[in-house]
Amino acid sequence: MKRNAIVLLAVLILAGFAVYQNSSANDKEYAADTAVPTETAPKPNFLAPGFTLTGLDGQTYEVGGKRDKPLFLNFWASWCGPCELEAPDLKKMYDKYGDKFDLYAVNITKNDRLDDAKDFVKQFDFKFPVLLDKDGKVTEMYRFQYIPTTFLIDRNGAVREIIHVLEPKELERKIKKLIES
Image 1: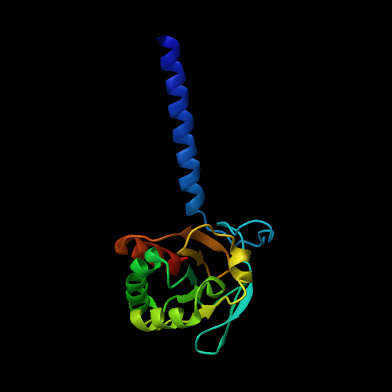
Image 2: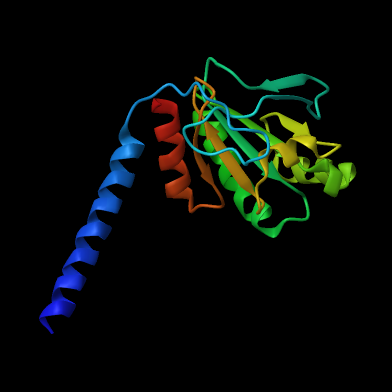
């Protein structure tokens, strides 16, 4: 009985220490200067892989390196149910905070029909840039498993966090935190 209590106490102490380390690491200010090797997925505290894509508007957009504003980089497809659920919230957040952060919505065009993507953008009245990953190279570079997936990238070009569909209040909290970074 005494041995079980000691083991339980040790496990609780280790778990508490792990939680403390994880939470304090997220609060530290930093300027990432190390890129993630392209064989691995981008991860927090490393530079986001750079790329250039063309948007539905015909303009060219670049990701990578320092920026004037933080970036909310969202990967989606028109056939994705969770993307449909997330779309109105993204629009609301962009309408509210769009002057303080950039939002690029990367359509996984290799696995989507361009006409369907255009209809989706029209249906949800997106005012932010919608980029087309026609050959799938950017999707491969970012190596995520689920869509939608969003990479929160700070002004220094570092990935701060990787998120999926969130409740509107939590999404707004994450955007505010990104803006303040």
